Amino acid sequence: MRPLAVYAKTELALHRAAGCFLYDENERAILDFYSGHGVISIGHSHPHYVARLSEQLQRLMYYSNAVDFAEQTALCEVLGPLSGCPDYDLFLVNSGAEAIENALKVASFVTQRTEVVAMRGSFHGRTSLAAQVTHANRICAPVNAGLKVTFVALDDVAAAAAAITDQTAAVLIEGIQGVGGIWEGSSLYWQELTRLCRDRGALLIADEIQSGFGRTGNFFAFQHHGPTVKPDLICTAKGMGNGYPVAGTWVRQGLPVTAGSLGTTFGGNPMACTAARAVCEVLQKDDLIARAAALGQNLTAALRDIPQIKAVRGRGLMIACDIEGDSYPLRSRLLHKHGVLVGSASTKETLRLLPPLSVSEDQCSALLDKLRLALNES
Ligand SMILES: Cc1ncc(COP(=O)(O)O)c(C=O)c1O
Image (cartoon, rainbow, N blue to C red; front, side):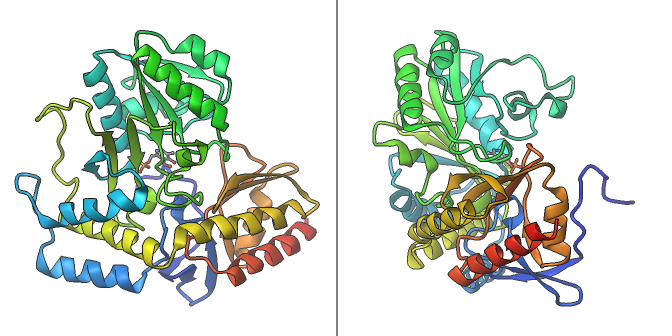
């Protein structure tokens, strides 16, 4: 048996990881500016995280939602105030796509409608509804069909106003588009989407799977757009677990969700809750969200000063830079010659930078030095 060959693989014989570094079998250190698609938030193998998970593993690894366990309550107690969203209830699942799937189901249950408005350039995952609201139909199999989705250009208020009707169950938008290449709606756009949804009885869903948990310098990226922006549903995953599979569909309190309408066997298990709680504790104790904002500002300013970089986008530690032509040779030189791993996006000229939020100023300087060197070698 072999792993199914469905991925384009980075050549790296990964053996262990600590902080912002990956190590191969020969203990060669690689500076991780990608965090495995933005998953590592507090740093690889953070000691507090490892201690919490080790204790949990030995004491109570699993039970299902057939019983209440203290780990779920403890997570909600820390997450509510830290996120600035204490007035939501949390439905815990295992992956980003599942969080999207459940948000769309809640929107449809609540509104009794079946249509969705989503953004061009979006990525929301590979399960059936998530694949259909993703703007890349190569991930849809014939069985992933039947949902009426209208894709609109990000930031085009008139297009949104035309697309959102009294048949729309939900409008779905990423806090900042990640896979699409770090594109963000303006504050005016977010405010207008909020108003249009309210006026037409549709629910606003913020996909914060990549942009949430502090990555953009606020707990959620939508929080950059003013207090009137208040999604009905929020989806989180990735940085929530720092590598442990945990995700959530956050439901604004007051939305009628009937008992029995949602469910999962593994979602919200004690290990997952403890992983997410440990992430929150470290975000808070080490002030990682404010640090992400400050480090991101310095990093984007420095990137804008590099002449070969044509454009820089993003907030906090969710950054894209575009170069002339295909970024693959540059990414490959960075990894194999300079020991830095960076990400790509669906646009071939884009580098995507998603370091752990615990990255240091020195590590950001090292990234810049190595990037300048690698650009000059082209
Ligand atoms: C914005 C966004 N939504 C949803 C997903 C899907 O998450 P998962 O791969 O955990 O199902 C991703 C994954 O990259 C994502 O970036």
